Image: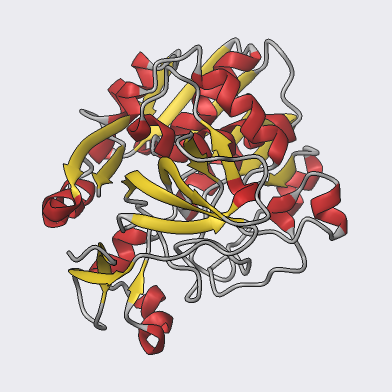
Length: 351
C-alpha cells in the first residue's frame, strides 16, 4: 500500500470469492466524514451470499468490481468542511442507510423509510456498502454522511460496535410491536436479528422468551440464546408451541418459520416480521389470522430512537457472546468460511 492508497476487499468477478486490492483513500465531502475502519461484520444475508455469488445477487454483475460491507465501527479520521459535530478521533458506529433528512418520514424520525434516497439495495433505499455507488467498509477507510454516526460508549469494543445496528433492529421490533411488560414472546431465528430482539425483549420486561432454531443451532446459537436470557429454547421441528405467545418475532426469513408463527400466536396476538424473505411472495393464512385477530407488523431497518435505546442498552449488557470470531481482513477466506460454518453469531473482519 502506498501513502495515497488503501487495502480493500473487492468483489471483482461474477464468481465465488473476493480479492484484496488497492484503491485511493477517499476524501470526505463537505457534509461527510472519513472513518478509519476497525471492525466490519459479515452479514449472512448480504456479504456472505455475495461472496458465494448466490443467484439472487447476480444483478450486481454489471456493476463489479465493488467494495461491500455495511455493518462497521471505527474512528473518525477526517471531517468535511461543513461538519461541526465531529472533530476527529471519536469512536463510532455507523447507520448504513443514507437518508435525505427532509422528507416526511425523515422529519418524523423514520429515516429507515426515507422516500427521497432510492438505491440499488434489496430494500430499495440507498445504503453504504450495499449500493453500487456507495463503497462499503471492507476497506481501511470509508466515507459516510456525518449524520449517520453514533458515538460508541466507552465500554463497547469496536467488534461489539459492529453489532449495534443489529441491536437497534431488535429494539425496533419490540418497540414497534404491541408488546407489554410481562408479555410472552417467541423468536424464530437465533441469528443476529433474533438475538438482538431477545436482548430488547428481556430489557423491556418479557416474562417468557422462547428462542426457536434449527438442527444446526442446537450446539451453538441456541445455547448462546439461553446465555443471553432466553427462558426456553427449542427446535423448530418440534412444531407449534404448546402455549401460544403474545408476540411472535420471526427473524429468520424462512417461510416455515412464518408458518410456525401463525400456529403459535395467541388470538389477539401479533406476529412481527423482521427476517427478510428473498421470495417476492409468501403465502399467509389470512382467514385464520383474521378469525383470531392476529395482526402482522413488519419491521425494516432502524429509527433514530432505536439507535438511542440500543446504545443505552449496550452499556448494561455483555455483547461479547454474540460477536466473533474475529479475523484480520487479510485472512478473509477464513472469516467467510467461519460464517458459512455458523461459527459464533457475528463474524467480523478487522482491516
